[in-house]
Image 1: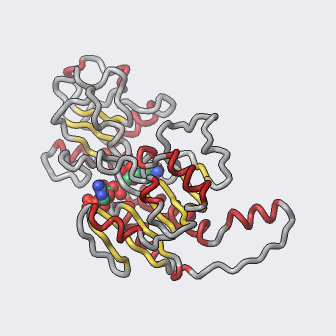
Image 2 (image 1 turned 120 degrees about the vertical axis):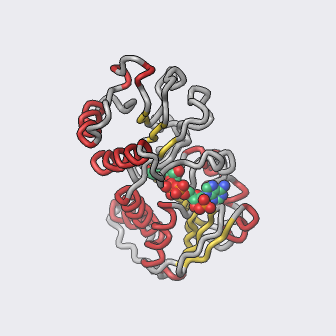
Length: 305
Ligand SMILES: NC(=O)c1ccc[n+]([C@@H]2O[C@H](COP(=O)([O-])OP(=O)(O)OC[C@H]3O[C@@H](n4cnc5c(N)ncnc54)[C@H](OP(=O)(O)O)[C@@H]3O)[C@@H](O)[C@H]2O)c1
């Protein structure tokens, strides 16, 4: 286990209790490298995993695996299992609905007006008149698209392959990106970070949204071209951005993103793995993998997510 040192002892005890047939060890206490068959990590240890000659599988303690990919210290051809789960999806649904509603009802102006003791009434369009575009229709994106539809928004979704979701207009592949973006008022990015999706939130994309649109990025910091975002906010092409993920985390104190009046920064909290249920999911995945059973969370190496 190579995890945040503040919680590693807790993780060790939790996973060991869930996996009585495994001998769980912390990375710095792992003993002989050849004993290690499974590595449970968020980020790779500094020296990588290449010295683990009997490694059978790597578990990413997160839904994304971009923090592991393309790293020369990763053992090639060793399968990677990501960590998903109902609670992760529920938390993302809560975050996305919260911020889409915040933007939709212009809550930031209401809070500003209160701080100035101003009685400022305004009528916002109803949800059905607001087009919300969801990029990524996987575990998280699909659930959020459905929840937004249930709130009454006009929802469309974009993915690599075709999807059918009742009441949601769906688009597939790069050729349909322009059509997906056109008329979108609030764009939510829930894509995995891959070579195809890096920097996808850029000037040309912003220019295709409804003028004054808002962007919510809960995917990864690498999806966003920050200079393009600042340009689009300053020109009025975008009216707000809600950012949960950043190229450098924690976001450095001197980043201009912190204090921009049209940006809300949250510290990668949209949906964190719950240690209790996340541990159960990891244990279940490891047991299934060890028994040679299919594992839903196994990453397809060709797709990179
Ligand atoms: N901020 C947070 O707290 C937080 C928490 C958890 C996860 N995340 C981020 O959310 C991401 C998504 O998680 P997930 O569990 O929903 O992933 P997932 O189940 O793998 O779904 C990914 C979705 O993105 C689509 N996609 C991938 N590459 C694409 C491309 N090039 N063009 C168009 N669509 C593309 C996929 O299309 P197909 O359906 O066609 O395969 C799929 O619909 C994670 O990778 C992670 O970066 C953030």
